[in-house]
Length: 188
Image (cartoon, rainbow, N blue to C red; front, side, top):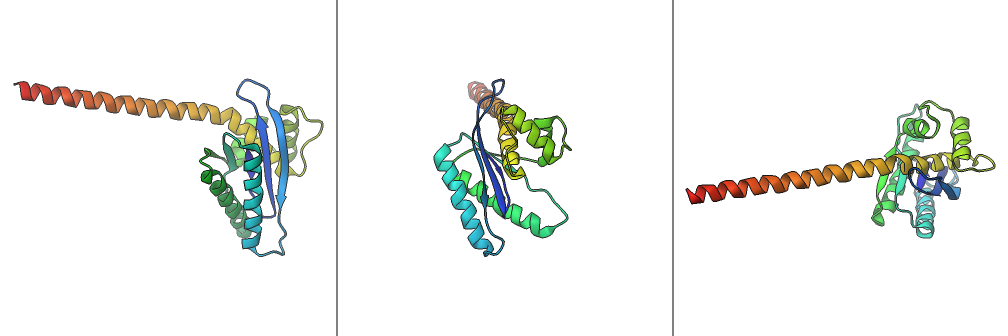
């Protein structure tokens, strides 16, 4: 599941597939809140919406766009608040969460980290074999996050698992060496 956090429009998209196989769109939409509502109410609306999506689709992982600094501080704050809600909803279910920057997502789906919204939408359309780009752009961005996570997240997970296994192996070797040294000291 990909989540493009936003206080007014929070894109949510779910894809199915794996690296090396075609991806399939399961669903995409935007959770909307009104700027006239109090922020706390808007955050509850986003939380309920994300919870409903997680309950319905039960994804294996959640990818959320990493908040980056923009010139408008109020936009950053709203995006960060919506992002926090998405992270909490996923963590509450014990789901692995990945965060991808906008440039990582653009590069993954289009080959260009500076691609514009239209290019991202066009590539999401092509990758998922859709008839038209998802609208609004927040929906396409959520799908781009999900696609990025399938393509990059799987590799990152395998690397993380290999690193953890290597660390465990090194710990076992160190413990065995220490035990041998202790045994040698007792024997002499």
